[in-house]
Length: 123
Image (cartoon, rainbow, N blue to C red; front, side, top):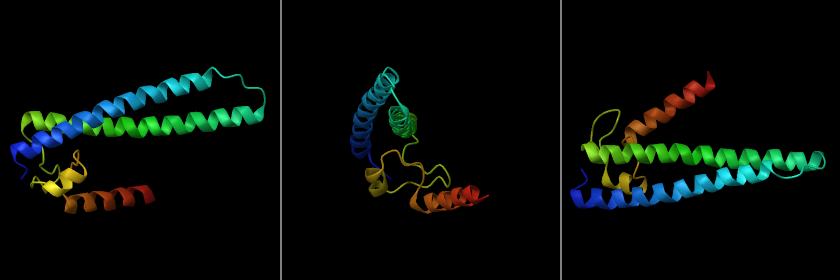
C-alpha cells in the first residue's frame, strides 16, 4: 500500500496532469471552433475540415475520459480509498500507481477487465 508521502506525490502528479488536460481540452474546443469558421471553397476543403474536426474531437474525447479518471482518483485520495482495486479490493502496487496514477484496477483485475471488454467487442 502506498504511504502518505507517496500518495501526496501522486496527488501532485494527478493535479498537474488535470491542469494540463484541461488546458488542452479547451484548446481543442477552440480549434474546432476555428475550423468551423473557415471558408470551405470546394470538396477538398470540406474533406480537410471533416478530417481535422474528427481528429480534434477524438483527441478531446480521449482527454475528457482521462480527466474523469483523474478526478475519480482525486476523490478516492480525499475519501481514503485511493490505491484500492475497484474489482477485488486489494491494494494496487505502488509501481502500478506510479506508472498510471489513476489506475482503478490491480494488474490481475485489469487483465480480466480487458479480456471482458474484448469479448463484448466481438459480440
